[in-house]
Image 1 (cartoon, one colour):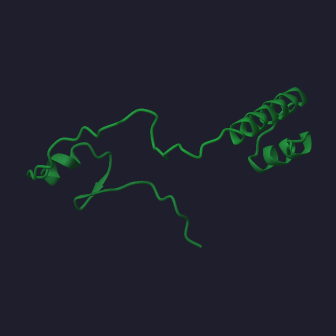
Image 2: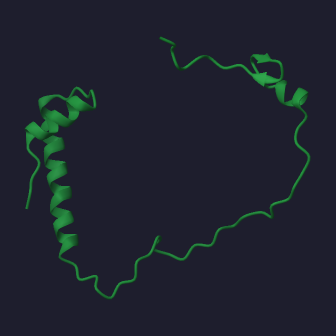
Length: 98
């Protein structure tokens, strides 16, 4: 069985820009190793005659009928816009130009 080391926890925390105390590193190492132990238990279960499923209980989608309706008028939609230009929502720029 593979195990998670403190070094691995520190490496992943660094990648995620997480700053963990020594106590948190210890707790995280123990927790992740417990998860791996549980995974080993699951791997030992015989699932040969078990059909794959998406949910543990049967589910049916409850959906309304798809009905074509008139769209909201642009002027009415723009009443909720904090900033509008020529019938479009103006939003802050999220991509910077070089």
